[in-house]
Image (cartoon, rainbow, N blue to C red):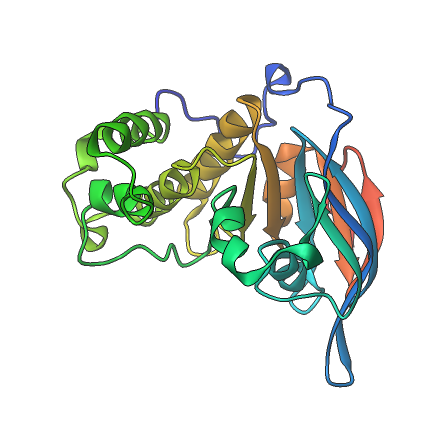
Length: 248
């Protein structure tokens, strides 16, 4: 990257921008049970377009279930989840692929295709949609430049560092120009230097207008971002601070 912030330093004030008021994600008393066990209990929250929100909590707190409901990997047992004003319960199975293209998701384990190069991994998300080669190259070049992987486009995932793999995964998630980017423990497999490079990259993406939902249990990351923090415990949203620290 052109500039790497000092580890532990706060994000620059210029990173902050006026909050938008349009709700893009809304949970209304949403719950999810597996048998007699509730993974999510009566979650009610609103995330506005353009926000950078960290969802924190220990393992089993409900963070992963929250993400699964957003990407329609699971359906709520009760309550509702809305994205851009649409109740996800109304989505038909045939609509799910189109919906998921509008939500970029980044995982802890990267999920890159090992037999494809960096460029091929990024382009593949458009190839399966029948996008022309000219348009694929235009979009791929744009996101590759954003994540600063121009010199690595011909490399395979096993030839990359952990930070480079995650940047490739982020580029792939951005290729459809999603309004929302969900980062589910994106730095769990990274060392401190790469961790904070990825967080700085997510901040830059947010500055361009993409709503970021970061799920993490890393206290240092959340404290450094110092933006809105939603704390979950036992499947419940127990606090919601507009700016703040990770406080158990």
